Image (cartoon, rainbow, N blue to C red):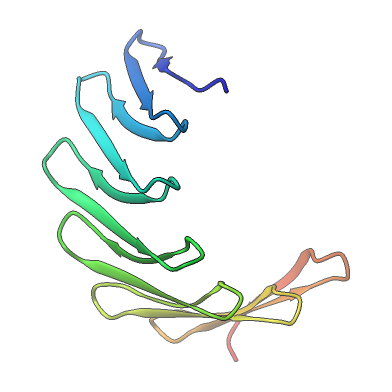
Length: 137
């Protein structure tokens, strides 16, 4: 499997990428020699991202490997509740602001209600192409 090991930008500076034996990205070293590392479960799910400034992000997953929580470098947690099909039902950030998602039987997003309560509705044609987006009710 060919994976990018090094990327050189137009100024000649290089960023380096390191992978584990399963070809999962485990480290990125930028042109200033700052390294970000990724700690993974054996199946590849990222458990922790360690940043050069000493902060880290963590993730938890459900049994299907879908993200349930993300904790950022400041300790702020974003949570996702998923429906029976694994699709996001709502997302709540560290401030308690919630975005709610609604789907039709074809698993298409038909409504999004954001933290300020506006509702956005979506309509699709028979080819599943988005044909309308409107705000309100």
